[in-house]
Length: 317
Image (cartoon, rainbow, N blue to C red; front, side, top):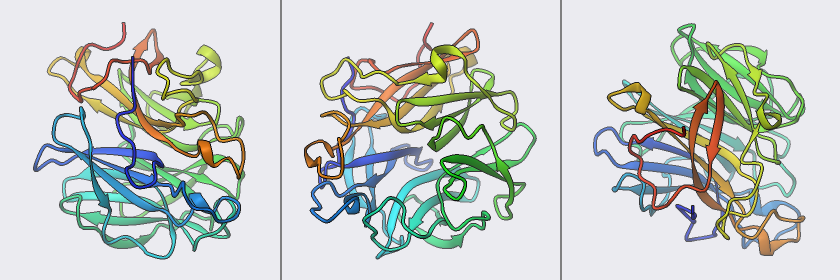
């Protein structure tokens, strides 16, 4: 059965993972929100004042080594949910930056700020992306079937909804509005192309909601299981909560039928925290699930055997 693939050695609070391959070295890099689970401040201060943790795997994801926190990012603010993509001119990070260290969720202002790097190690600030709201978090960026790039994000001025912005060149963005239905409420969008479809998954705090599209523009919610995956705990004793805020790595094989999609998510090994003072269950771990598509429906197997290799294998049948 599965087991956590990574736990943060400083606070045991790894969440919101994004995984990208270093195209020069072949190593896999994981960036994540490093929650401060030991903070004894009021309210939800422990999920603020966070930095971005970095772990690296030189063995195709079987083991991960903590590298510290990402240098060159903003200090004195709250950093959440990094989205990192590879482009022909290097790597781009789309980072949620919340002003200061509030003790309530999000705070008065949150922006998505772009950074760039040539090696995944040193980051240079480009600046915030104008998305029509002063409270936006959780960026996801991917190319779509219409030839454009899109950036999906949670617009907290519109409740817990996912909006999108479109760009032809990753330089200039135009806000499009809501991308999917506002209900059920959600956050943490991720978009990827797999098995002939575009997929959008969101964190609904009761599992991950799944939407499907032929072009990455118009979306329809998956009907199977109420549109949810990872809505039941895993079999492993350290994977006993629903899955949260995920990333997906699609590994291309020589034969497209052998392409593999691996979902990285976080869960709470001791169960979902019961409230602000439930320090015992604040800890979180990064887990993996294997994705497969059967008759146009996305399925997730979170009880895969670990250690788990980031190499193309047979998909779920």
